Image (tube, rainbow, N blue to C red):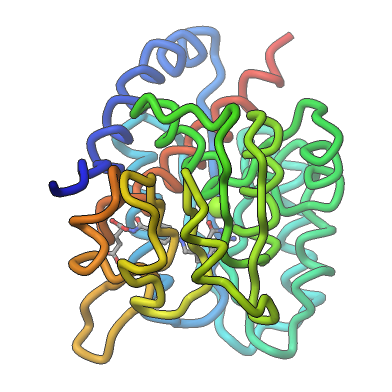
Length: 283
Ligand SMILES: Nc1nc(=O)c2c([nH]1)NC[C@@H]1CN(c3ccc(C(=O)N[C@@H](CCC(=O)O)C(=O)O)cc3)C=[N+]21
Ligand SMILES: [Mg+2]
């Protein structure tokens, strides 16, 4: 038996279609959702994401700006730029593409973004609200993962979810969202001695560590749902996940491909967050 492929591309298209009415209504009320993406330096991988985000904005009729500043931009200059967009009423979401050049402290930048425009969900106040279950803009990749699960009928409630990775942008928030959905959650990381054994107990396995093809078929329980958050650029230019897709395909019950899995969902959730933020400005 071969796993069912979870098409993030197609689910993403569905969600964007579902959003269209809401966007149009808001625009008729005089509010066009606006997103600014700030790109520091010339990282070629970042360029692709930025282009995909701009495309999604165009498709949904958002106002979008892409601000490209040189890699030598100082922290103060970047803070000044953020301050400007914090105050700009036609902008509802601010995304500063990470990682930043070494001379800029990421925390200072994230902290400076107005929490109501924090469409990445990386601000400490957004993270805190997620943790206590209050209303918040949720981080895009983790909320995309939850959407993929729910929309394929793989509801997390009562399941054992194993998360490999503990980053602030993927592992920790996705674990918290799975918990909120009533899964039992295990978080594994580089110092976990028996990762394969724990992974094999997962009904839902979420992997986001940045190690190409780390997860092999003997890490996966037959029939499990495998969500691959990895986006690794191989030397040949091809994109590859943290899961050995070919190897895992005939043991998993469900699997996300890379590309075409979690990636498009990240962008769609960014669009959803921007819409949510824009709607909140309505009287
Ligand atoms: N502040 C910030 N927020 C982010 O959300 C953020 C970031 N910084 N830095 C970089 C990572 C990475 N990321 C991706 C988004 C979309 C795809 C995506 O659309 N991937 C497509 C293919 C893209 C391609 O072909 O290269 C896919 O998987 O099918 C991938 C990766 C957002 N990130
Ligand atoms: Mg994001």
